[in-house]
Structures are given as C-alpha cells and as structure tokens.
Image (cartoon, rainbow, N blue to C red; front, side, top):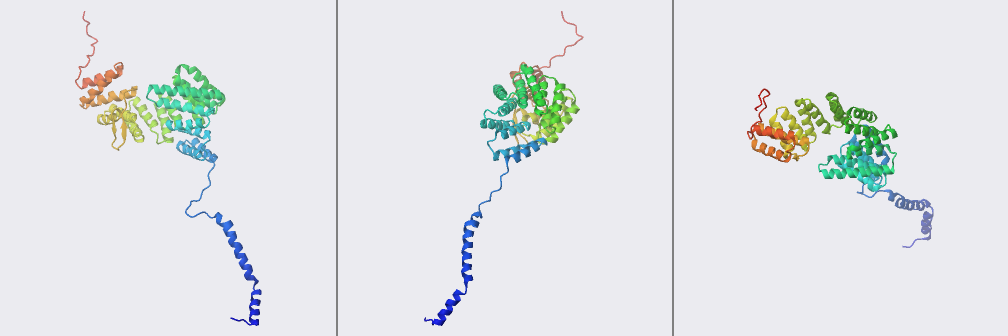
Length: 421
C-alpha cells in the first residue's frame, strides 16, 4: 500500500514523539536479567526441604550439665548424644556421656562410649581413666569368673596408664582408688591413699568423696563410709546412686528407717529404676516385715519384669509371708524361667551365689509344702550334688526331703538323756 508523503511523515513523527516506550522496554529487560541472575538462585527448588540452622555442641553441653545437676540423667544423656551428632570427633563428649551412663546404671552403653573416647584420642588420660572405671562396673555384672578377672585386669591397666599421663587429676585418682580396691582388696591401703589424694587435689569433687566412701565401705568401715557418701551428696544432691550407697550404709549399721528413707529418695529421682525398690524390700525382709517387703518387691518386678533375681526376691518374701502359691510362681520364674502373665520372657538363673542358691531351696520347700514332691526332689538332689559342702543348702534340702517323706527327720538330742556306757 502506498503512503503519501504526509502520512509517512506523520507516522515517523508519532514514533519519534514516544521515547517512554523505549525506556519501558529497557527497564523490562533489565528487570528480567536481575530476576534471573539474582532472585532465582535464592529460591529453593520445589519439593526439597529447607535446611535449619545447626545448634552448636556447646549449647547441648550446657543443657546436659544442667540436666545432670538436676538429677535428670536420661535427659543429660540425650543432650550429650546430640552434641556428639554435631561433633562426633570430640572425645570429651564421649567421656562425659560414659560418666552419665554409669550413674544411670547403663554399664554396657557406658563401655561403648568410653571406648569411643579412647579410639579418638588414645593418649588422653581421662579417656583411659573413665574406660577403666567403666570396665570395673562391667566386671561386677559378669557372672563368668574368668571373664570377670579379665575385665578387672583391663580396668587396672587403663587406670595405671591414665595415672602415668596425668598423676595430678583428682578424678583419675578417685577412679584408680575404686578400681584398685576391687582388683585387689589386699591393697586397700594404696586405694585409701589414692582416694585421700583425690580429696586433697579437689575437695569439691563429688567423685573424690564417693571414692573415699567406697574404700571405707569395701573394708567394712561403714560409719566412715556413710560420712564420706554424705559429703559427696552435699556436693551433688541429685544422684540416685549416692542415695542408694547411703541407704546401704544405714542398712549395714542396722538403721532400717534411715535406709528406707534414703532409698525412697532414690526412687523419687529415678522412678523407673527397680534397684532402690528392691533394696527397700530386702530391708523390710531383714527385720521380718515380709508383708511390706513383698509390696516393694512386687513394685520392683513391675519396673523390670524380665529380671529373674527380682522374681526370686519377690517369691522369697511371699514364702516367708506364708503365701505359698504366689511364692511357687515367682520362684519358678527365677529358677526355671518362663513367661509371665503379661507375656514377658524370664530366663532362669543357674546355681551360683548365696542368694540364687536360696531361691533354689526355697522353691523346693514351697513345692514340698504344696505336695509337688517329684519336682521338689529333683531340685534338692541337684543342690546336694552341686553344693554338698554348703551347710545351709544341705540343711534346707534335707528339711524339704523330710516334708516329702523321702528321709526320716534327724532325732533331736535329749539333753536329759543318760549317755550309754
């Protein structure tokens, strides 16, 4: 189409007279470039979760120490584990975690934590000391005599290595004292010296006074042990372990009321722990109050239903309280094992220490009284074969055989009878 000169000139004029359009286009291009190069990189991709800021390990450590001071060991343990997740190569986190786990009675987990600390830093004195201390606790859980000796040997080696690295650590001296007296009771003088050295190095360290109490307890000096444990408690007033130790000393000094009070304080701090409840049961049983003893023993079983020793202690209190059928059921679980009414599997205990042997002959006596003499006879025969030198076991087995009519009762000597010539 042909445009006249006037119309062409008019169109050109309109284009020249609209500079804002050009400016707008420039600004639009600039905005697009800015969005693509600056804004887009900051926008997270769809369906990918955004990261959250990581807490510093120090914040978890502060939290853990606060929980520990309050006696909240489970929360303290969790906080140390969170610190380890953030920084898994810091040995001190594993050291402190192991200490908390020991106080909580988690000795197997404590061994793993302490061994990790040594793996990270083999020449760290405190890592070796804590590892040795944990192995000492593990040794006392061990039923196999050879394995127990092996663990104690390892424990003392670790503590001796730690002392060579740092002889002026109060905590290491305290641990060494405890392990040494367990390793060789004949060296209690050296152990006592180490505990006293720990107190001198740091009189405000709970473990120093606890170690001193442990040495006195191991040597039967219960009044001094009680005083040392009470000093430790004044430094750290929220540890169930200390209340249990103090209760044990009151028990040894035949102050049952004070012992029970101390155990109850441990229960208040750690309601899930069966140990102080069981100790209360034993304290009441010791003075013949088997009714109350059985109540606490049953509470202990509720907390730890797969523990055969707790079933045995409960069965023993039932038997002493003339609740024979209940005694048979609980002692059966302790001796033979089985499944509880709640479906929990219990593994029976082999003949071994004095208390377990008592479970066996008490079970046999309960069966004999109930007329179940076939099984009772098998138990008594086993005891007489395995423990013929144990006078208490033999006397109870013979009593059960008399009840079942298997043997005649031994005549009681008549003090007024005239000796035959």
